[in-house]
Image (cartoon, rainbow, N blue to C red; front, side, top):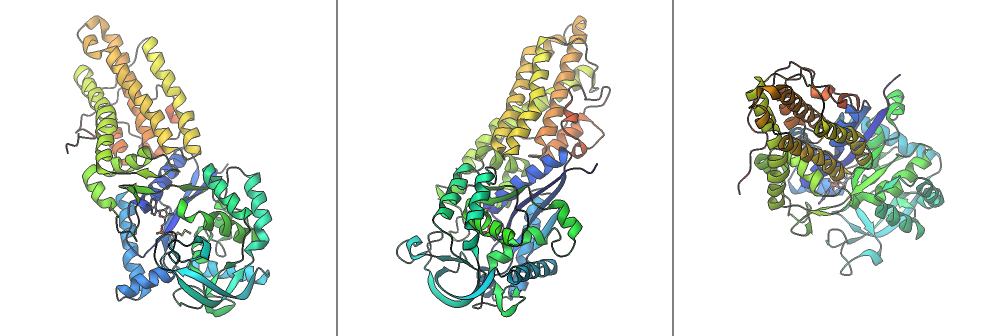
Length: 512
Ligand code: ME8
């Protein structure tokens, strides 16, 4: 039987500027779940990409004196590089200027038009260029400013095509109520429920005020509103209108991962568009919180952005990925700083995990010539360690099932602590002094290695390169990425007689 499929997406990022900690945050989170699900035997499709049309990008290009496509071609290379640096394993990268996207998006819009879900109307509204959003007067701050970026809005009046969003109000409410998992976390679900309860207005889906966009197939004077264009990436990338078999294999997505700033687009407009096209809705949308630096939302428009590359240079890619997944509860806002990153690094990585690895490997090297020993009779301490390991998979699986990254890591670190205390309590250094205790020494060292093997597997989705190094030290020939869980977590799978190799510390302490 074919493996079950698992389709996970990130937002497609605007190419008005280069990747920053915020875009990296969503992308790393998606990568962790993609790697974990692959390990669980799923046929994963992990999509990310760039949003290249619309006023915001056209403006950034114009400011740089470039043609928008030329500008996008340049900026997108920074996304490719950043995702490579962060060891992101996306299966595809969609650009909204790709031919495949243009075609798919146009046929989707034509379908809505043919079904009578679009009509020509006149729009007058307060528009924020930066955020590509029309606002109601009641939503503005300081009378005329955009509530998101605090820039001045302008009155825009133009002929637009409208999507009959209002007609989907009841069906949307029904769907959200019938599928409690559809919008997560719960606070976002409630936010959307009350937003829909206030009544939905039809949604403008085209523009005549700019040309940098996809022409509407039924009226080429209009280009698609950038958000409609962008949302369609989730289906055009996997073959909508082009490769129906591939499309049917992966759609609907299991997860759309987004930031809470783009909740309404994903939980109101997008599902209604899909309903209009009579297509299944994504199974779940998760809106995470904002990363804050010194208490403020980090954003390109505020200019308080730290680059992922700076942090990777200082802490390494593994610690980078670990920190964001461990420090902030996914779904909530969270402050990030050099100080807390250094503290996490030294406590969790250098002390807890790094020391466990280096002392176990050093003892195996010293006491049994680096050869994985055959364990003897099991004692109480061993059973305790083994039992803790036994519960690990189901805990991680349950926590990652709701994108509880920090919770999954804390369960893993409880096991790391357990393994450290196993070493302390079983005192191999004393056992090594007595030849009569040789069997006990072998058992203890074997269990320590087995614990490291299991840790390497479950930590790998979070810290792939460190775990690959640890795996190499353990001398297991089959690659770590090929391990299938839960089977590979069967206690006692560490191959006896293999050669363990000492290496440099995985996480040398950082002194500030
Ligand atoms: O909105 N903290 O693109 P975008 C956490 N193109 N995450 C953040 C963040 C912060 N301070 N700032 C940004 C767009 N993000 C559209 C999306 S999808 C069909 C179209 C993350 O480049 C977060 O995931 O502005 C947010 O949703 C995304 O970057 C927005 O990126």
